[in-house]
Image (cartoon, rainbow, N blue to C red; front, side, top):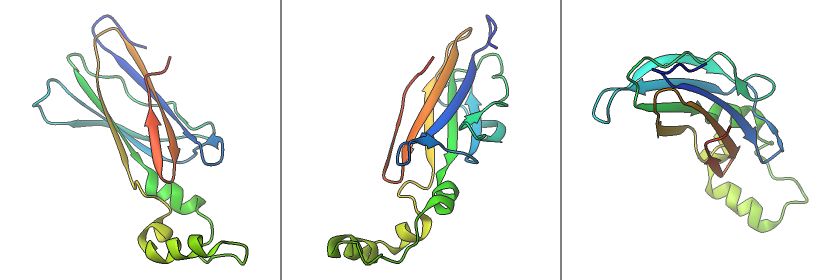
Length: 142
């Protein structure tokens, strides 16, 4: 909960490639007071079965910027299909896999996602991450 002097942050992740919450994604919460200050890691968590981080720490008074770091590579590596092409794959798909061995091995084009945003005292910021192997989208939720 936020107070009059601090802001609060929550997040969740939906894997849009399968239409389900992304479980076990490591998330770090960082903060700073002013655009030129150094980032301070406030805490680390991982998403639960609902894709939510329920234990992110409170923001210190005076926080003006927040960064959420999502470690997506390990998640996609554990959820990627077999790297060998199936008999039903088109020739174009097979060639694309041969041209991108690093992507095929990790399962993620974006191995990490860092979302930085400004905060104001007394406000709550829910920042959902909509994720798939080749893109992501974020927004301020409610």
